[in-house]
Image 1: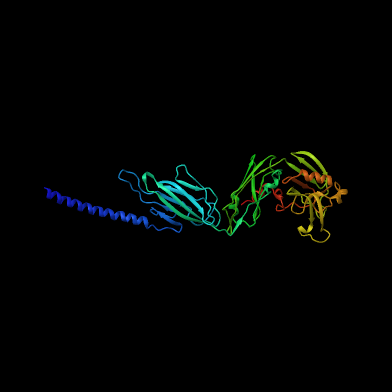
Image 2: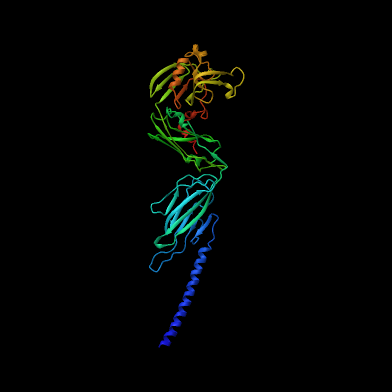
Length: 423
């Protein structure tokens, strides 16, 4: 009996040995599979992973004898590769486990990129803005759930290098109107140094919100300049909130948005001056109430003042007015003079300003080169009373309509035509 039991024991041990040999082959195959996953161009390390794609790691599911899931945590990093838009955040996700640490570093500057971790510790998202033309090193570590194996994932991400950057230059400059606010005629303007080819994409990144709400629309004055105005003048005391989420926006031709802008403008009272070429008088109204009547002299027949709605764009206590600035450098129409208390109302050389040489005809005749002349006392009052965005409406001057492209000739277009000028 003892001899038979021993023989049976040898057979059992032999069978067990064969079984263990087969199992060892399977385990070896799994180990080989795990260690020979083909890394992508962005995957610099793939520890304890099954290699299930670019920027990710993981392995097949398995369970221990007591039913616990022992497969390693899978980590995925996106986006992956090169020429990534820096406006796209880096997202690290863990499957079959949680993230225990994530670090992202600018490889050139050595500076860390901040991020936020979800409450379940499975997703990390960068919160700092990335930059153009940089490489970022990502190192993520995760722990498997249910006793699963830990894992570390390393990868690199490179952002695109634009041919040029477009800065959203806003007019009026917010700092210039911080103390006064803007008038009811002031449009919101963005100017870019380069022509914009993808106007629809850029316009979609621009948002204007008004309180109280008023209908408005964008109009492309030029290939590099877009204006936004209301259907009618802004209501007094309107708050205008402007956002330009242009960072990362493709402007076309290899040019991308350089930064975002977030600006709030406040509209003050409705200050509207009405200059009449027949009466040679200018009446100034505040919220509909007449506050002053000023004798004026507008442009003579050969150089008439433009008719239509003008908007104050700037003021200067002293300025040199030179007809050569708009192409008239010689002849009887040429001039160059220092003027005072000058309120600019167009880019075509039109101002409301003091002119002592025309005081005798102010209120009686139009003799200027296109400006609205007033005396010293009235010029000083007007200079102090009017601000950026306030309106000067010119009628009966004998001049042509102020062009839409001339400074702020925005109001020369009726609303149906204006609303067709957007992208």
